[in-house]
Length: 164
Image (cartoon, rainbow, N blue to C red; front, side, top):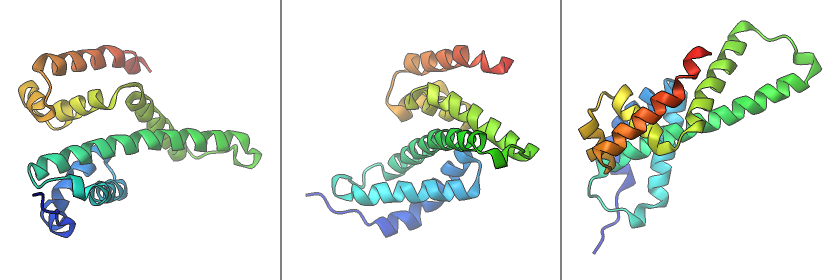
């Protein structure tokens, strides 16, 4: 028989790990807190169908996916804001910092949006977290050749971004 998981206990035990993971990807304290809250909200909503087995691994993967999704949504919001600014006559003068922020968010969002979440996850595990190909394959339950192929495809596709 399945016992129901205790979200509060999991939050106390794994909250720091989830926050650090989100922070590593999001690079922003407030966004990382939002992502962490989303992870535990998802867990709360699905707690009847989740077991305590491999909870750290599950939460780590949920934090990764939630953070990547938030980056994608940030790109959509940045595009919307850019269109709003362009459409507004009274806002035609922007500061350099806002322009830089919009350009950076658009670039990151464009890159992340073009690739499947799984490919982005492979890249983050390998390049950001420093996992080996074998470790990424084990963590994601895919073959080493799939990891290698995903990284190769990403490198080839991203080569045109370096020219921008």
